[in-house]
Length: 171
Image (cartoon, rainbow, N blue to C red; front, side, top):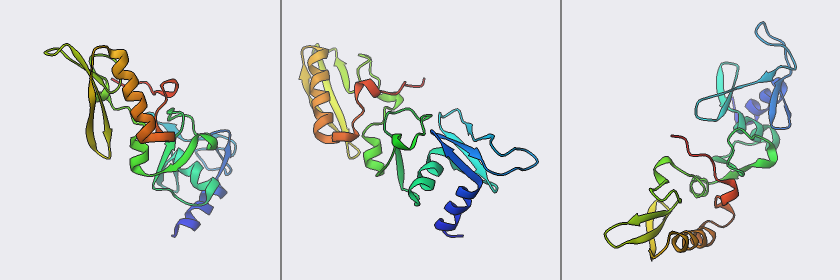
């Protein structure tokens, strides 16, 4: 089955309403109008149609735009917010620009800022295209954090994770 046929089958089985999917069809296990999908421990929602599991955000995107993107970004960083206006087609690299991995939280509690005790300085750093870049050493954490934010704006542009949008780090 080609992508267009799969998307049309999804459109006939599911209806989109404000970031959620609802069944259009009755089966022995569900009724038309019931909400479709479930949320996994990862924070992402999934839906199973005709024995195939899909990411809910991917189905919503494909139903709306008519194609499967390589990667989808939740603009506000909330993986449970699947409203179409919160989803955008990005490259894997662009999506990684706003990722906040567990190991990125340093002893300072500031993303991209660590403390170098031997020199009594704070170090600002950033990962660009898979490589770490040292942004310099600073006397205060605030100075280092500002340099990091400036670098995010320069290198990541609209794909940076704004402080207001920072996702909760799962431990």
